[in-house]
Length: 129
Image (cartoon, rainbow, N blue to C red; front, side, top):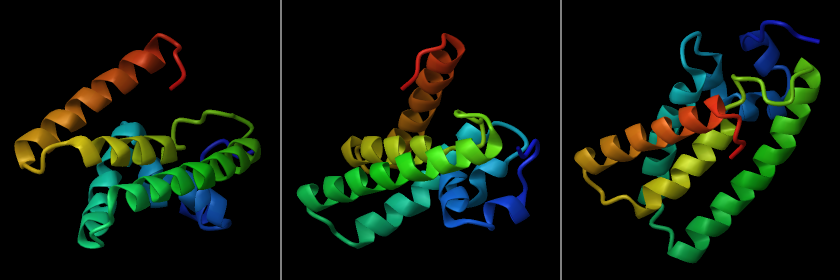
């Protein structure tokens, strides 16, 4: 069991790198927030790809399934199923939300803060999303 994941750990297996949101989950402060922020450049790449809605959500579904595998493997290695640094769920969920968010910085910032508010609230009330 790993007690303090680091870059060496997350780079040791692709599943760990994915589950830790390409390293954003290593943030010493608010890793979920760092993971949510990591969704922005990924979204930018998806916008540049100009995917139609079916392709976009097929990709989101694929990322979700990859995340289930990666998060399970990582949680098993850490001995903690929902370790705070496993942030792939924040990334994929926020990618889905960004699709429906009007493309302006004001809306993106509002979506970010509302998403984080609900994520923190649900975790503090022991709701699993």
